[in-house]
Length: 507
Image 1 (cartoon, rainbow, N blue to C red):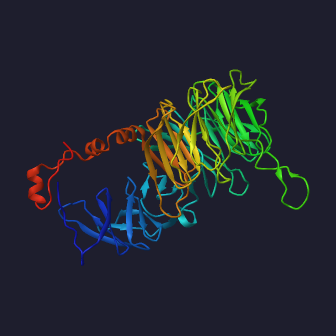
Image 2: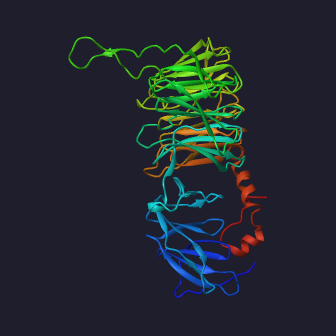
């Protein structure tokens, strides 16, 4: 290891250091970033000093050293581009820049086309436009996964669906993206679904849905359209290849055959749920109000390995189980009745296990938790254990590919994992809470295709390794020790902290 000293006229309160290609930048609490040429590590040469808008909290540089991102306490990331050799043998730094929102951690993608600023992804492919950026990306309320492919609809200056490759450790690699016309024509991708064979993707449009082929996920190709006259708010592929279930913004649910991506065909419709219960009118006129909540279907979910579908009514009071062995002739097989959302607003929570035998749905009424149901005999659904302890409404839930873990996200930016191998006795594994004031609620959650990681979030996407959560829950001390290694011996402890009694923690 080589230690070098960097000359400075005063002590620096360094907050971040980053470097590549013989150059480093050193951030400071005073809002400056000092650049140094360290091609000769024995004689580092000071370069220009850059100025941010507040105390520097993080730095990032592209792999080729041509772009630097500075995150400061003002919540702004300043981009300065063109780090290059100067005529005098030192190096210069061009003044071209772009300023974007978002502070905290910053990082560039390996291909130098994206910048992550803690809550947003930014497209930095075109740095010649005014401001240096043409759009930002923040994730929305639904993810769809198939194998190692993850699709996330997003909102920004233009709606987009992002495609990512996942790895067992929870990281993601950018692949392609689908850009929709916008932002003012309403074509925002409210819902997205990837086929189990990763061959097709369907995303919502203002008039229904668009099918995209994914032979090359880096360059998705548009194919046919699902024309229903309004956006789709929920999408899911069935266990049978080539069939898709869709719910539009009017609450109508239908099944489509999309094996021929260029010519999707509507082959069936799901009968609507019971109409909302009437309630007494409070306007002084005798009679009854005809609406007590939204009508039609809200969300749908399918079983990955069974011909079964569940649909949640838009008023959150009815979950219907469907037999879809023949997708062209869906047959209602059973009904689970709940009491609706306790707050009057929630995503329609209804998740189906991969084998189609277990359901998790809101308990409703005054309880904000979820109930597990055994629906192996859908004509006689049996209530089982409850997922409790929630202080705010649960927005979405998902089963792992093996069906033994359920993940939930709620309105206080909390993601929870539950072990549900025994439906009657679910066990809490992990709770991850962002908690800071103003943080947007988590609205999306999905497992990767192998069930190794769970992805969750809203404006930003987070991940957690499921095996780590299981090990942490089973033995927190052993899990911590596996990270930090063996603790100090009694002699080492006495030499460092003689006034504190030694206690062996990690063997």
